[in-house]
Amino acid sequence: MNSETNMTQASGSSVKNLLPHLAVIDSAGVKAIRYNLHELANVFTGVTIAGELLLQHMEAGPLHQYASNICEGSERGCVLVREICRQLLAACGEIESSRDDLGTPQR
Amino acid sequence: MDYEQVEAMAIMYSGTGTKQERMPDHNSYVSGGTPRRDANTTHSEVAISTILGAIAMDPNQDKSEANLLNLLIVDDERSIREGCRDVAQSIGYSTYIADNAEHAFRVLDTTSIDVVLLDLRLPGLGGLEVLKEVKRRRPETVVIVMTGYASVQSAVQAMKQGAYDYVTKPFNLEELRLILDRALGHLQLSSENRILRQQVKSKEGFGAIVGRSPEMEKLYRIISKAAHSSHPVLILGESGTGKELVARSIHFSGPYRDKPFVAIDCGSLVPSLIESELFGYVKGAFTGANKNKDGLLQAADGGTIFLDEIGELPIDLQSKLLRALQEKEVRPVGGTKPVPIDVRVLAATNRDLEHAVAQGTFRKDLYFRLNVLSLRIPQLRQRKQDIPLLVGHFLERLTRSTGIQRNISDDALKLMLSYDWPGNIRELENCIERACALTSGPTIHVADLPTTIQNWRELTQPSAEKAIPRRGILPIAEIEKQAILGAIDLLHGDKLEAARLLGIGKTTLYRKLKEYGALQ
Image 1 (spheres, rainbow over the protein chains, first blue to last red):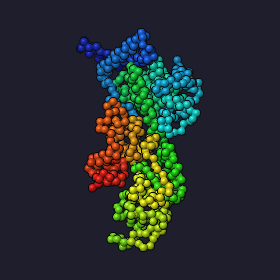
Image 2 (cartoon, rainbow over the protein chains, first blue to last red; image 1 turned 180 degrees about the vertical axis):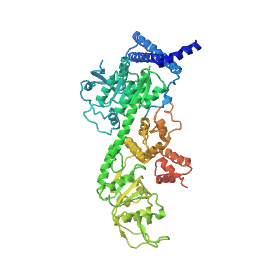
Image 3 (cartoon, rainbow over the protein chains, first blue to last red; image 1 turned 90 degrees about the horizontal axis):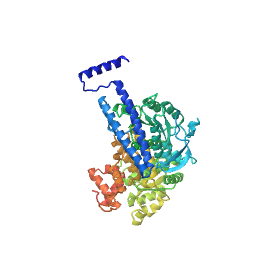
Image 4 (cartoon, helix red, strand yellow; image 1 turned 135 degrees about the vertical axis):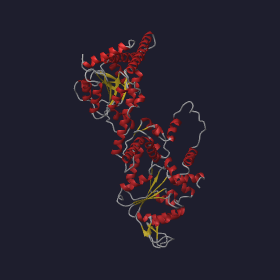
């Protein structure tokens, strides 16, 4: 463990002592959450697109309904992942981007 | 696992999603062979050339193949690679996939990739490094980054390094389609601009005449024949079609090219001065004639005289002109001795001279004298396929004069193609100049075009509401009258500016005002 991590943990401990109702996550923890969120986003993107493609190729019936349920579930999952990402960005003091921030793509 | 091949035999789809045919897909790079096309040529260029119908394509090349753009998907998640691949194929992309940076570079080395869909988080070399490398190798490649966190920082970083766009994971089918469609549009537009520039550089028709439509090709043939004869030529065409340009082309393409070319606008000469301008005068012919002065016909001696708006020449001068042309001599005002002249006569008008002859406002004998050879310049609406070429030509010219490079959006070009251009090329030229002056960015959009053209879209796009005419049907002549009078009114009586903005000649404007009884 390097000195930077020690310092982070030390400052985290002192904050925790002062404000016991706060949960403190150090930079390594944030990194791990980000990694897992990215993985979760990957999973949901894959499931969502596969589900929607599946739905397009299925005729109405019980199987179509199952595929529709998968899409609905994955869409909800996507919304939740986005929400957690947004919360994490806010907690880390980062600003969430929107297209307005960057303007339209280059022409 | 080595990078995956899409399929040994992929099903190719057209842009509309219609299954067209089966063809072997991308075996070339798998087996280490050469890619099927020149790595410097993007598919979009070929696709656009088909749209414009202007670039000769290899007749043996399969069109459906030529129209496909190459997309490389770089992501370590198999389900995303496969999902994106299927969606992209349904849009009309030809797809390649790679699960890490190394594989991506191998594909880039052997294949001409147009678009890269790139995950920012990759095992080994990160997505930003891949982005940098892609832009270094092929700067024109469109890179769309897929990011896990929609932070401004990450998006800005990617855009700074040359990404065209970004999409935040998780995304759905619709978002993916939108972003791929947008990239497709971008590539088509940039390639179109490139082709237009190349075309303008490679061929401008006769002299400065721009156009490659069949109508213009026919015109070039006539010009070529006319240039090598010495007969008078009557050039007919609507206002703004480029009659003087054609006259100049006839002169400068023929044996008179080293001799003078004198253009006279018969409509703009002051009536009392036309005679002295055309035939010259001798000292003492009238007050202020302190010395002899050659007329314009003498000034053109040995070369070509171009009588523009010949239909506006007063009837009494028509007989004098006829005499000069027949006798090949002029008699200066106040002079007694005729002066021999040797000139080639070209005349132009936008009026129906036969009708004028029938009405007795134009001399029949002069008409026959001038109408030995005649050519009619097609209206712009008859050769709309030349519009992209003309737009490119005017943009290129403006770039040269202003140093600012501009292009035009797909939508704006489409609208321009649908518009009828009553003021012909002059109107188009004014439209481009105006749009370049108004646009804030490098691209001209629909909003930068004149309102007449923007309103044209509304008029020509039928909707339930618009299908019912609100004010009834107006005759074109009435619409023209309203446009002219409205423009003069808006410009507080500035007729020259009105003519310029309307895309018509000042003579035409004055004639119209005279017809309306609005000339003060």
